[in-house]
Image (cartoon, rainbow over the protein chains, first blue to last red):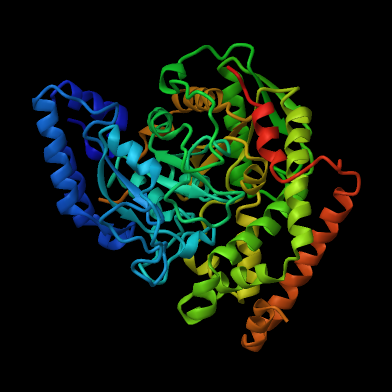
Length: 470
Length: 60
């Protein structure tokens, strides 16, 4: 068997099906790696070794009996600590061990387990998912596996670190303004924010009902496609989920790309970019040009407007959801988290409703102006390589909040628009920090987004690099 | 005053400064939204967003 850092969901699932490896062997290897290395990387809040080994033995018995639960049979995964998994605490990154109580089980996790996945535990995150850098003063700051002392991106920071470090073969994150894609880019893995309504959010701590998305994170595009195929689809427990059929995303990865029109934004997305990021994304576009797509410059409707709407919606909804901790135990929250919640008390119902009404028009306009001309759009995911913790947390609370806004300015518009957006690794800074390319499609175009991501991943060759954590 | 505004008044002074700045930013956002919604159709409602997403779907 290859070294652990090269394991993928697709390869391990196939090896288990062919009885070349056992779920117990794979799960034990993950748990030993977590035990050995996560003390300094801080990706897990709860590693459930006993539960994982019980599940692995049950999956092994299934294999022996010739019964496979589904495409992820025996594959060890882990989940952001805002997914309610029965029997495990859900802190949501707060000081409170059981913060998210009274929920029914997380549908996405239940679907992964029903497809055979083994749950390793729950992953670290920014407190209440409020912040793009991933820091956590209660559970320890997750460390970027490629650059210790640097942020991992957030808010699904543990999901990014655990996947990049090969503690888990894949993870779930949630994305309200970039919280799957930012840690994916910072940690050199793949992360997908699906279309709004594609994946159920039932059993996941809400931050902003209008903008929250649950998404898969893994080392390869194929692995993300496999996870998405399992978790996507209508759920009666989440009224926003679509009844649209779920395609076999993994089976469509190799479909031809010829005639695909790829748009590169002329405005906004390349403004104020770090030079290394700009060069990496431009190089990625040249690679995509070489795999047969037609590259076209395209003007996108001003993203500041949809970002403004999103900010107003998220601040209001977040204040409504988390008012109890903010009022009863404000001393437990980080200063920036408390500030972002409390600002929401001051949004008028009028402004909130106008922002909600405006959103539909902005989505229609974006689709008409962009996706009538091109099939997919590419943009950078992060405006700079992952900063050091010292740089990310320097200055006053006000400066920190502004810095947070800048770091998520390239991802946030697609939450407001509800469009599917994938982050794939697109190179490294000179000092070895990963960079990310964002691929965006029209609603429910996950198959096309993943297909282009897979083609780029195969052509670019970044997958062979491993973080220096041993 | 609503409870939320009372909570603000209990913040330490630097936080109150920040809160004033962020509230000013919110006012700017509200102004943008006010301008942009000037010609919004009367038929537009919050649930229109889900309809817009479904109507614009890729049917590959």
